[in-house]
Image 1 (cartoon, helix red, strand yellow):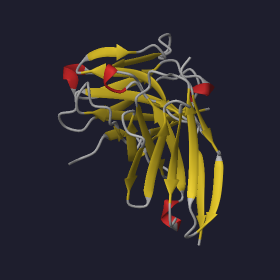
Image 2 (cartoon, chains in turn green, red):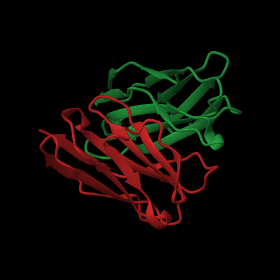
Image 3 (cartoon, chains in turn red, yellow):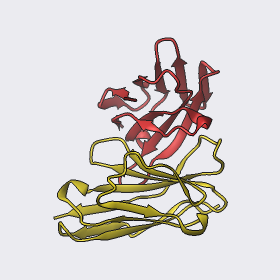
Length: 113
Length: 114
């Protein structure tokens, strides 16, 4: 069935360093790839998303890259800050064909001051 | 713009009891989703509504879970009877249009079944 694998499960970096989280998906019909940030006791918050017709997208310190041939996509956070500490989830869906979001297992990011 | 509202935020019940969760999506959003998030895992879709019709309930354990979305706005998710493995956070999300991908999540209801 549809599956999204996410790595690493935990990531610890020093403030100011970069963090990279990687995901692979199994459904070749997937064309929408959002990333969510979830803080303790809160619901997931969308931070960036990318569609299959784009290879890279950037929003300030956050960027996402997509390789459709290899079926993997990555989240890059530069100049990390303590407030970036949270659990990050990648997801994939068939987008406007009504496909549901299939989530990865999550990455717990810790940014040490 | 107000976000997705959910209540209660926390619920503790004993196994075999019943429980209900409520969700009010963002105003005007046609699509509503219920997800189950077990501790340490990503959310898993339980059911998707388009207005007041069900689009996908393939992963809803229908022998004990039920959901409805009356008048295409608010929604309730019910579990009867609850099992220990139902302990999880139940998240509600909504999106503006059927063809819109972006989903906005509520804060969730944390259910503990003893």
